[in-house]
Every structure is written in structure tokens, then in C-alpha cells.
Image (cartoon, rainbow, N blue to C red; front, side, top):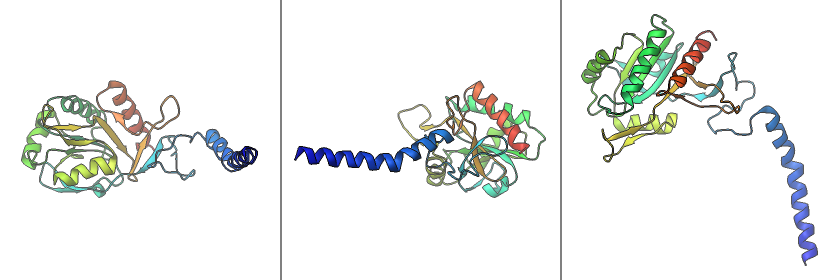
Length: 227
């Protein structure tokens, strides 16, 4: 019986080798060994002219900005823009993200093809009026920088399911909310874009708390504006 078991095992290994090894070799050569399910797997559309990776389409949204105006992803059509999740009373990472986002705004100020969407994860507090005051406090000048509010569960869905950027309530942390400190970069066609890391893997999002991350996203915004 052992003899037949060994023969059967050998046959399975042989079949595996015939079917899967050529595919593995192909993926190694193409640099797609590690793939996130959100990545565009179409080899003709994975990279743009800039060499930046296309992760996939950004989620659709419709929210209300600091001026009480309805703003959707369609308002950013034809623009390169950044998306972040924050809240105005955040005592920890948001002030750092605010400063870095203002720096990015100032670098591209006056360019009608660049915008920012800052989405509050505490919309019950962050009304349009509150966000307008917050915008003035942090130095929002661009007409294409919208601080957005809406229904809480809807916003959490955009963050957690749409962008896969964590946002949630936690009464045990200062401020009562937790969220990612990352910036999402969207191209003129509504696709999430990013660069590869030193190992050739997509970074997906840019660190909004780190100067290196801010430098990287500014470089890639310039590339996409020229794409």
C-alpha cells in the first residue's frame, strides 16, 4: 500500500509542477508575485506613463463641504487629488496631518487641476459650520480643498470598505476616535495611484505624518498632473 501511496503523491507533485510552476515563474519575472486584490491585474493598465501603480478606482462618495455645498467624487473629475480621514477635535495625529496637507496645498496653490478631500469621521460634531471654522484655523485657502461631513456610518463605509483605511470609534482613546494617518492619491481618471517601495511592492498609500511620505506624495502629484 505504501508503494501505491508514494506513486499517488508523486503524481500529484508532477501535476502541480506542470500547472503551477510556469505561472509562478511568470509572476516572478513580471514582478507581480505579491498582489493585493484591489490591484488592477490588467497588464496593459497596471502602470501609467509615470510608472505609478494603478490600484483601482477610488470609491464614489457624496458629502457636504464646509460651505454647505454637496460635493461628490464627480467634482474631482479631471483633477489629481488627495483623500484623508480626520476630525476637528483630534488631539493626536490630525494636527500633524493638517500641517502637512497645508504644505502640500501651498506647493500646488493656484493649480486648478489639484484638489483635496478631507473627510471627517466625527460628523455629528463636525458640521459644515464647525468645518468652516476649522478650515480657517488650519489655513485652507484653495477652493478645491473640501472639508466634508455627512452620515457617520456612510463615512465609515467609505473609509473602511472603500479605501481600506481604518476609521472607527474607541472610547478608550483620547478624542474618542481612531483613524489612519495615510493619504490616498487619486489621478485625473479617478484611480487610486501609488509608487512601489524598495522591494518593488506597491505602497498603496502615503504616510501623512512623515516628511518622507509628504515628499513622496508631492513628487507623485507632479507626475500625475503631467500624465
